[in-house]
Length: 86
Image 1 (cartoon, one colour):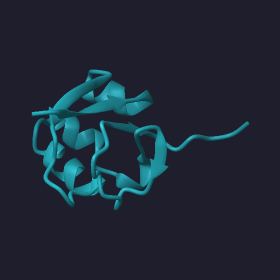
Image 2 (cartoon, rainbow, N blue to C red; image 1 turned 180 degrees about the horizontal axis):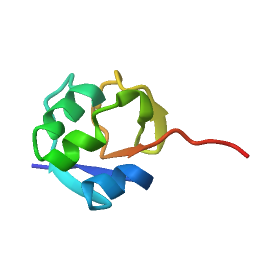
Image 3 (tube, helix red, strand yellow; image 1 turned 30 degrees about the horizontal axis):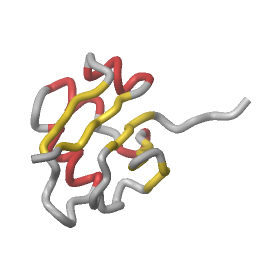
């Protein structure tokens, strides 16, 4: 069974305490939000990192997506704070 590689960046990584993890491929039709709900139950650190969804951005296979996007056949999900310009 293949899995989904999760990558965490910036304060998301700091709150969870690791830069990523491998999880079982979610069922067809699962959205990023639904996966975050499931991961939030994994540990208090995950719950803290994913508590304020307005402060999270996501990319599936290196393409930006909204949190209501279906994961589909993606192999990688990156989670990070909004990028600010300067």
